[in-house]
Amino acid sequence: MSGSRASLPAKPNVINPKRKSAMNELIDLRTDTVTRPTPEMLAAIQCASQGDDSRDGDATVQRLEALAAQRTGKEAGLYMPSGTMTNLVAVLAHTSRAGEVLLERGAHMLNTELGGLAAVAGVFYKAIPGTRGAMDEALLAESIRPMTRNNFGTALVCMETTHNGAGGAVLPLVHMQRVHVLAREHGVPVHTDGARLFNAAAALGVSVAEIARHTDSVCFCVSKGLSAPVGSVLCGPKPFIERARAFRRMVGGNMRQAGLIAAAGIVAIETMAQRLPEDHRRARALAEGLHAIDARLADPAMVETNIVRVSVAHSGRSAAQWSDAFREKGIAVSPADPRSLRFVTHRHIGDAEVSQAIKACAEVCADSR
Image (cartoon, rainbow, N blue to C red; front, side, top):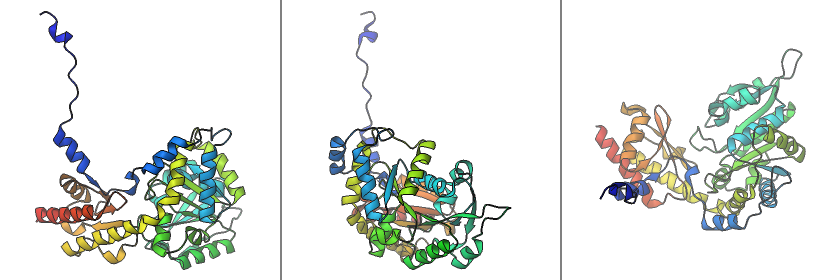
C-alpha cells in the first residue's frame, strides 16, 4: 500500500529500562542541594498564596521572612532565589559599593562568588589566613583600616559557618564573638554567610539565634539540608533589610508569585532542622569507612557536619578521574579541587547508601593499584 510508512503511527520514545534503572540507583553525594521537597512541602505549595511579591508583597513570603528573622533573632528577613544573591545583596547594603571586604582566604564568597563582589558590588577584598575557616584574629586586627583621604578603608568583615572549603567546619562561638567585637570597635559591620547555618547550630547544640547574635547580618539557605526546592533568606536590622530590598531589585532578585516556593521554605525551617544530626552521623560514618580503607583518604576527626573532604593527592590520579571512577560504580561525587573530593550527606542518603559508597571506594582503590 503506497504511503503506508507515512500512515503508521510514530514510534514512541522508549527509554532503555536498564539505563533508567541505573539512573535511579545513582547515589548522589555531590551536594545537599539535590534534596527534593517533602510531601508536606508539596502540600503547602498547593495551598500557598499567589500575590506579587515584587509589587505589593505576598503573604506566604512575608510569613517566611518573619519566621527566618525570628529563628535568627534578627528584626527582619528578605527572601531571595539563592545564597549567592543574599551574600551579594548583603555586601551591597552594607558597603554602598565602596571599601574593602575582609574574608577568610578559603571563604565561598571569595573563591566562588568573587565576580559579584568585584563586578557588581564594586568592592575590594582582602583574604585573611585562617584555620578551618576561622580567620587569624591578630591578622584580621592588623588588616582593618579606617577611611582616609586616600582610601575607603574597611567596609565589611565576613565570616562563614559552616565553612564549605574547610569541609563543613563550624566556627567556634567564641571566635565569632571576638571577630564581632573587634569589628564593632572599628565601626565595621559583620556579615555571616550561613548557607548551612542550621547544620552549624545542630553541631554546636545551640539555637540558630545563638550563632547569629555574633553578626550584624546573616543568610541561610532553605534549599540545602533543609530540603526546600529554592531560596535563601537574608536577616538583619530593619533599616538594613529595607536597603537590601532595593539592591535585590537591582540585581534581578525580585520574584512574582514567590509564595509557591516560599511555602516550602516555611515547612523546611519548621520541620527539617531536627533531622540534620542524622546527616552528620552518616558523614562521620562515611569518613570512618574511608579512613579504614586508607588513612590518607579522610580524617574522621575533621568531620563536624555533613561534608567529608577526601584527599586523593597520594594516588597519582586527579580528583576528576576519581569522580569518574566512582560514577561508574553508581556513586556521584564532586571534585573539590584537583587533589580532593567532596562527599555531602543529606536526607536521601541513608546507612545503606553510606555502606555502598564505602564499598565503591574500596573497589576504586583496588582498581587503581
